[in-house]
Amino acid sequence: MRRRLAVARQIQSRPRGRAARSTYRDFFADPRHGCDRASLEGVATDRNSARSVGGAASPRSRSACPLMALTIPVRSRAIADQRVIHVSDSGEFFASGGDFMDRMLAGASTHSDEIFLRDRGHIAESGDPFQETVRLFNLAQRWSRTGTVDYLILVPTLRCNLSCSYCQVSRVTDKAQGFDWSDATLVAVLAFIDALPTNHIKVEFQGGEPTLRPDLIQAVIKRCDRFEQKQFVICTNLQSIDATLWSIFDNEHLYISTSLDGTAATHANQRTGNRTSAFLDNLAAVIERYGPEKVSALPTIDPKAPPEIDEIIDTYKSYGLDSVFLRPINYQGFARKRHRYSRELDESWNAYHRAFVERIIAINWQDRTRVLEETYFSICLRRIFQPRADRHVDLRNPNPLAVDYLVIDHDGTIYPTDEARMLARSGVIDLGLGKIGDDWKGETWELLNGHCSNAFDPACERCAYQPFCGKDVIDDLARYGTIDVDRTETAFCQKHLAIFDHIFELIYRDDERVNYSFSRWLRMDGTAAAFGEHIA
Image 1 (cartoon, rainbow, N blue to C red):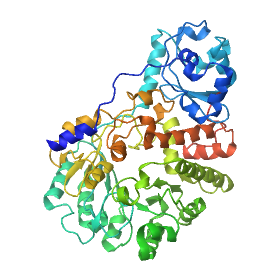
Image 2 (image 1 turned 120 degrees about the vertical axis):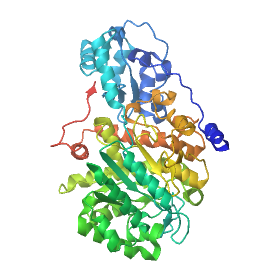
Image 3 (image 1 turned 60 degrees about the horizontal axis):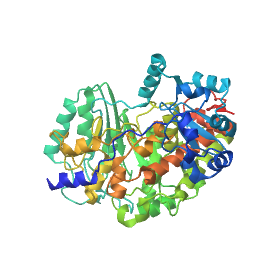
Image 4 (image 1 turned 90 degrees about the vertical axis):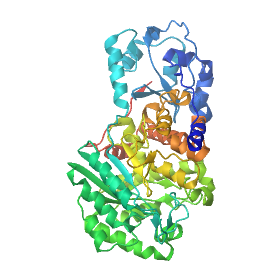
């Protein structure tokens, strides 16, 4: 009961009333958005003003603008080069300049303006059921759909044979006792897998270092033989590989995820110390045996001392790895004490990430024999153009917890996300939903899923990027101890504002080098001439 009350206090209720939806008329008539040329120019050039562009709607005015008979949901934001982007509920967008805004403000929209907006689905005749149905259909296409559980993150052991300063799971030493699945837990996990009413499954083995218990990994993989489609991912530090592990790695459905923090010196400093050569030898052996397609790697970046960008890129290229998932130190586990500054991400991180993407774009243009990408940037790009291209659970909307995926910890406790089990381990908040074999859809589950969408958050309702973004209440709890915080002040919001700002700046840069990389990150045939439309 005490734990449930503590959870309820930290998962505060947000205002649930739906924010008023702006129309183009409301937006341009609202004095907070700037109604004269001087203030509009300020909006286009001042970044603080740019944040106010998507402000709350004003009362409806009665202008004589020809568009006033039309209902026009709008979210807008100033970007680079004196442009403002306008985004519909369902994610269709265009950019405009000062002349277009002047016409709207003056009630002097042209027939061409109306045709442009109507043909692209940005406006609809008031009361037209067909156009409203089309809009609602497109909106539904944006929302994530979930089914039964088919994605499991399993933690067979919390023990680890490394001691990274930023360890987010608060691992224990490899000699510790009582931190592996018991026989009873293994039986319960296998029974759970047997009962899944699906013909496809993804299992991710986390730790600690899961390869310390290859027998448990083998038992789970064998139990999944019945599934028509299956994928296994072992998240491993690759410090030691014996014959048993090689036989596990040989499975055609299995992939390897590891950490590669940059050069050997950087990796040694942050992770492996004098054992770095063993890791690098094993990484090279795995890639030689299976090819780079079976391996994914990510660098953990200390935002206070990030490595040189070319050092990371060159290191990954040397192993044949084309995707780099930049990850700043996560404010979890040991990092909460040893890297306290990781609680917030300041502009220096955004600038580093931006420079990294720009550098990759330049390299891709110079050397077209391979395509490099920053993985998370590509995920965000696909959220704009291909919202269902992948199933990245950290950036979907709504993001229901413990519905289609869940975590089973070393002691059999079920958690809604991997980060949630990290919070419990750190003593921040216990979001455990119960033990494997129990019904986990109780009070905590209901509280968390009552806040799994950005659709009813007042700040998100006014944001141009809402159709592309998501919500992460676990991250808010980790950083602030509550979800009752201004969304715009959270690290999650500020990070994604910076990424989406960068994407739209690149979309409208009119640069063939950008279009070349974007086309390949979107897995297109050929190169698109442009990715966004503009109205003068």
